[in-house]
Length: 517
Ligand SMILES: [Cu+2]
Image (cartoon, rainbow, N blue to C red):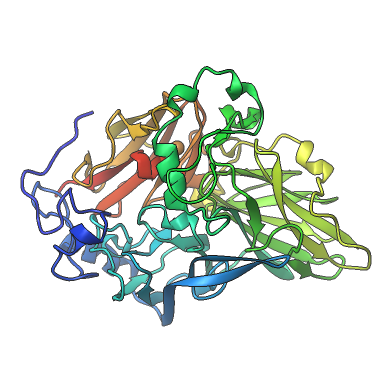
């Protein structure tokens, strides 16, 4: 696959994207609407094609929201507090809830010491509101604010986070729930459950220090025989700040081997450690819709609710044919909605950090009894979670059969040893383009040439897994495997396509789909 490179660079060229403050000083203004180069024959994020696609979505009632990204001291429960960056002073950030068809008008105030943005994970929205600095907008500079305004087309469970460096692995994330004006499910209660792996502000660690440590690669440490030992930490200190967080030997059969790169000190459900969990109360017999979001940086979570079966109703916001399961696996960025019928008692909702032998927990309480311990491991976790590809899209959202007009092959490359994660051997540059044209049926073929799993995420579209499979925006690609997904190119612009392991994407496993004009 050929990569087109623009020959000229606009004010925000390849070298400036996602760079630090020194380079950003070269930008005339932060948060302005125009961003990417318009030469090279590609639809511009603020081009007329993007405006036309937005006009087709219509306009609904305007929902005004203000969000502040700021340094904050956050309690994780159990007396633990951390200095981090968050949306306001809560973790997760404040839930945003709108109805499909609404216009969301959100003003982001950046009180962080560095540039940021908001990306609306999973939304098929207008390209210039997608929040990819250096591609679809200027970075929102420290002290500046930025107005996002767009029509929210599809109901479902989504979330938001920055698309700048490894900021997402701090506390900068929040759920975005889009209600369906014609909701077909009936339920008594709804529980939004956001999962996270936590390192920021613990013993001096930051995600940036973790990235610096990982970026040095395992180098000489390879081949010492340590990689076979479960949960073994790398011996050396981090590049700057905190102890080593490199994880070696974390292994999971359902992830095809190596489970992750980072040994996090905490795993959280709705911002709390399992020793001091959130308790969700309901009555016995209540039907509860649980909306699960994996906001982690480097952790797949295996989730079960003790003594309950779950009925899977949606993944990545889109409905599926209902399937009962004991347990679920969520890669980073993935969402699942399930229905449960609450039994009488007190039950752990456990999120096992897959392959890392640690867990997060919340509690469902419908009756008396002692709360489960922090290390509760419901037996339902022992079941094999269904692969997303085994689910079927609900008929209402099934992608019609059609021969692809274009196939884009994306070889996932790199290794832990060199920490050189990339797509087709090329580290991310904002000038990269994989061409598509509006109106095409496009097939993306992910070929995982690495020894690790990668949750691959496409912005602005919800693709379909093969054989009438579920509609998703984030799909796990196992090591050594190939996954073909199809979508209709109906949302013009420049769209990020990347691994949702925040350390892999930041190392370079990220590229751009560009609509040709
Ligand atoms: Cu990856």
